[in-house]
Length: 176
Image 1 (cartoon, rainbow, N blue to C red):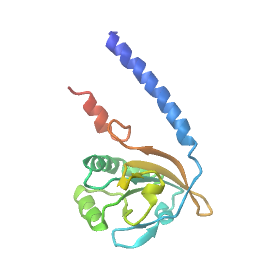
Image 2 (image 1 turned 60 degrees about the vertical axis):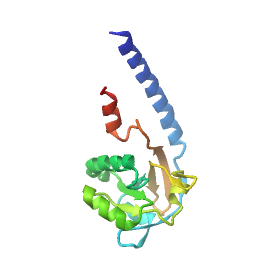
Image 3 (image 1 turned 90 degrees about the vertical axis):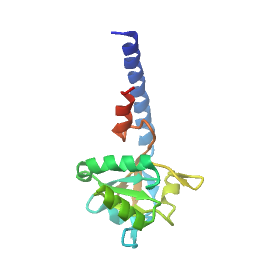
């Protein structure tokens, strides 16, 4: 084995250790209370976050920066491919600050199948740490709905180039 291959294996081992540490930190979020925010659906109606769980007790809430962000659009394209698998285990909702008419038009043009709501006029993204200095940030929150209807965050992750939520980054890294 070459020295370069040995170094790759060593770095992958260190990355695994860091991911374990990250998982432990994320576990500390378990139980963090989340308000029952009002978001806007494509009909322009206000809907409570708690109603988006449907029959599920768990939800993956995607914090998307909107269609002006090509990376956020690429992540959502990927989520569309795995939506059925995820939705069998948990509610899956994509939120963005885009106006609902833009969401509807662009999501339909891309063939997205998951529910999408606007956070415009809501503090959800800011309160959950996905807005800084008035600008949205991409990521995901894992939410839990208790039998009494209260909501809590179980975990969260940010999105960015090279993350584990978009395989395109890792695939492109293998090319010259």
